[in-house]
Amino acid sequence: MKIQRITYLSLGSNQGDKLENLQKAIILLSEQVGSILKVAPVYKTPALGFDGNDFLNTCVQVSTYLPPETLMLRLLEIELELGRARNDDQSYSNRIIDLDILLFDDEIIFSKELTVPHPRMLERKFVLYPLADIASTVKHPIHNYSISHALELCKDSSDILKLSEALIRPVPLTEKYSYIAIEGNIGAGKTTLAKMMSDEFNAKMVLERFADNPFLPKFYEDKERFAFPLEMSFLADRYQQLTDDLAQFDLFKSLIVSDYYIFKSLIFAQVTLAQEEYNLYRRMFDLMYKEITKPDLYVYLYQNTDRLLENIQKRGRSYEHNISKDYLDKIHKGYQQFISTQPQLNTLVIDVSELDFVNNIKDYKFIISKIGTY
Image (cartoon, rainbow, N blue to C red; front, top):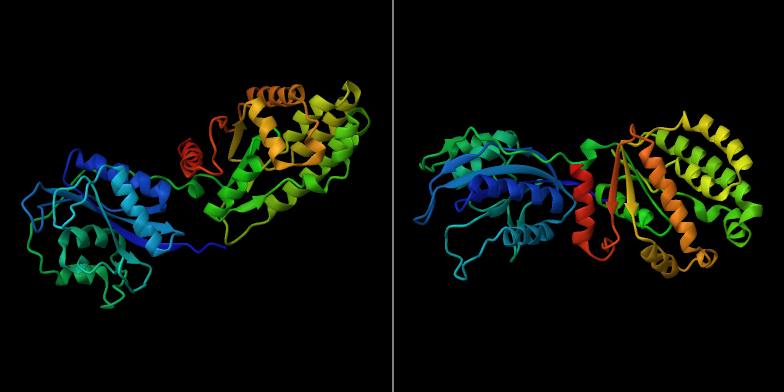
């Protein structure tokens, strides 16, 4: 299990739209570093150590899984992404954005790449004022006194002005949702995405147990004969799994991510069953559906049919090799119909046909951003 750590970061800008620069940095921090728990007010201060424009400064409290050295590298990448150009001589200068690690839990770090706590944080009002707003009782791990007391001791005499403008805290995905169901056609990547999200957000994962179904290989060999027992066994298993897993409260996990939703059973049954079988199946489904917990967000991954066939071949399940393009098209139409008739379900459709979220971190972050801002 990943361990979340609390870090406090300082943000500053004295070029361009300074308030906007800070807000963009906070958004990127939420996407690439961790959940933003607190955002301090913004303070205006003169440039310190060089002749330059006034700065706007703030601090944020972040919960992150990143180790401190990786965190530092990520901050440098965000600075670069926002357009900062560093001087080779390391002298003070105007900057679009400046990001620094002030505290990392109660750790003391002295290395070539990083020093924590920040060695000059106690000398700077523009750091201590916003930090005291969100961490007044937190103790400096070396001096062992609180940030509020550090502010009282600070000898920095530079002017500082608290602004009325406030920055927006991006709401973490784990605060917005308790249960996310990820759906898609065969080979769309729903299980892979569910696993990636579970790993990143320390979420409880509910995966479909298709591999344990003895009727699945038989179904692909003789669809007419094995369609009904296959769909009934899937329905029973999905109902049992979702009923059990969603009812269990996990003290260490605030989010559940599943790679299917119970309505998947009805979609596939519409495609595979004869009308009389489907009518019986629907009666059983309706009884079970009333008892199932509905997801806070239903994500449908759309993947074009040619890409689905490629993915199916790549994963090498022998019983799937005879899946036809026509069958996949019917499944997709079933999902389309379901989504259009379920306005009460909070549904987000994401086209992943041109994305490679497994091997390209930007594509994965794009999907997480879509989910987080929906």
